[in-house]
Length: 193
Image 1 (spheres, rainbow, N blue to C red):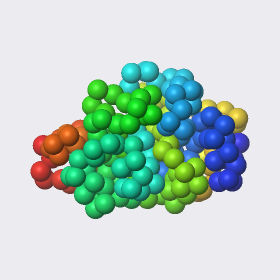
Image 2 (spheres, helix red, strand yellow):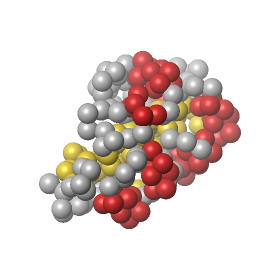
Image 3 (cartoon, one colour):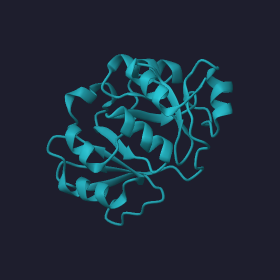
Image 4 (cartoon, rainbow, N blue to C red):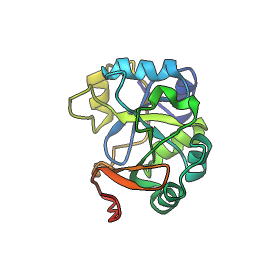
């Protein structure tokens, strides 16, 4: 079901999973602070409960609220590259994000897509962000694909097409600010090995 932004936000606040366009493909989002909502998203996607999920934030400042002792290098990278195609995997996230954490930490990103950015801003908190697909299958690039794959009852935020850009660069930042590239992408960080 296609929803206007305000209705999509209400669905998120009620604990639902919502699909929305991003700069790459369609994503699935849920309240990252709700273990129940994160569980719904994992079941819908048929994703292993131990696998990590990215968290979409609206700004570098919002990131600082969820990572106590944010490494200075991570804050610099967020200010320099966000919104944009960089996911920062950070150690020591706030306990409220335990449902999405892995042993490496939590991956955070800030989308430049206007609908994704408006959704996280209107929601006012972090959203789980993962591609709209079943685990191991190709992601959906259009709202019609999302409805075909997941059925017409999954809320889809109005907002046009996904951007079709390359997947983000994923970089792990240690507590000491050391960088390690986990997935190469459009952002090149020469100091990340």
